[in-house]
Image: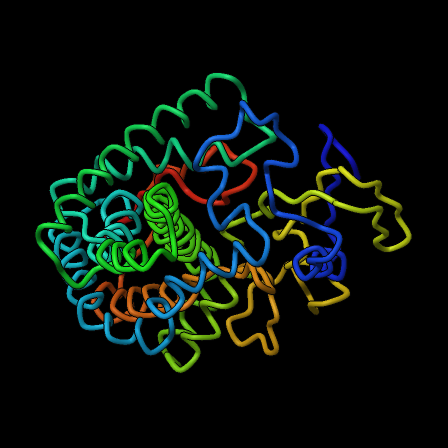
Length: 360
């Protein structure tokens, strides 16, 4: 299928091919934009090929390993328990604003070195930046909002970089400063890397937590099974990722040579994208794909991508979700939907809730 100048692929096998292909498909957005339209943010590791992509990713890779994320578990649990305590004191809450949003923002902000007083500000900036990723609904107004937010965020992080230059600490900004001093990255790459870490470190996790809880509440028999057999927690989270994939569509890709996929010829210079949400419900890959089954195994979903561009923060998102839902099961046994209907975000790339009213 081709629409608005983009080839869209929905079969699991085809999407997997797009994710793994690196010889004839490029992530460089500069191949599709005039030089005067290229912004610094367009040159982040999200829109790079090797060896530049490898160089940039290697700078932060070790900060997101399973071992490194495990060290954050006590802090994650502490924040989760406090948020649950706050919710338990109220009859009705919005799970998104009271839990799903503040949790991942607090964690990635601490990792980066952003003070708590600025959490709301950076969330609003990142929301405007992320809205510009959706090429289907992108218009001049959204593009300008994204550009303005990028400029403001860039200035803010430039200030933090100077602050931590004078006041060293154990955070990602100081890690990037060290890489800058070692000539591994330049100043612009350092600032845009922080923005990428901020957005990637919380945006999809908000969607996972929100739609994950909603899915459990819509499938009470699965929720009861999880309560009785919490050993299914890990597979439950994988099924949430498959069933309601936080990222519904792959980010920018363009063919650099003539390319053939599943018998379809695509000329060089064409944009291509995989529909992750559809691939994760492909009946050729998953039995009863529209059934939410927390015991599903195997479950080789593509929610976090594949290959060299696979999501670097997948361990972090999984860990936050595991701790969050474990504590919810333990401390909010009567959690249920409120009478007011949940509201979904209006975007074709991120699948998530704007609000989720619940009773505690």
